[in-house]
Length: 119
Image 1 (cartoon, helix red, strand yellow):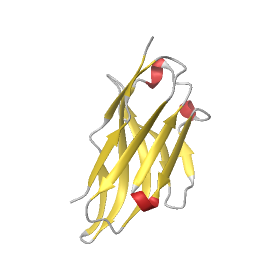
Image 2 (tube, helix red, strand yellow; image 1 turned 120 degrees about the vertical axis):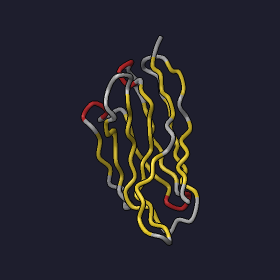
Image 3 (cartoon, helix red, strand yellow; image 1 turned 135 degrees about the horizontal axis):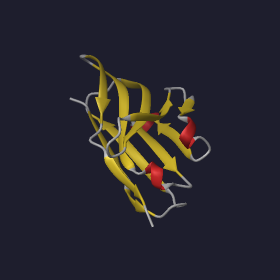
């Protein structure tokens, strides 16, 4: 069984920074694409950023230049560095990973970590 566990959320003032982490554990052969999604109150879940196993990253326009996604393949961990945070970034952030296991490929999700941007 594979688990993804996020951490790093919290309350931050506008203009502040947070760094989210997501660690994958279990019987893992490798992890292909990874990503971060978020869901704000009353809204649908949206893609924030993705990163390939080779490190190529893509971002939704609203976070370009402010957020940076990265990963450490040796630690089965991905990160989301969030700078210049805005109130509209308030959401529950979820990590996602395409994980190869002895039993096949699985699209795994974390439980979410809440980010609140408010003064």
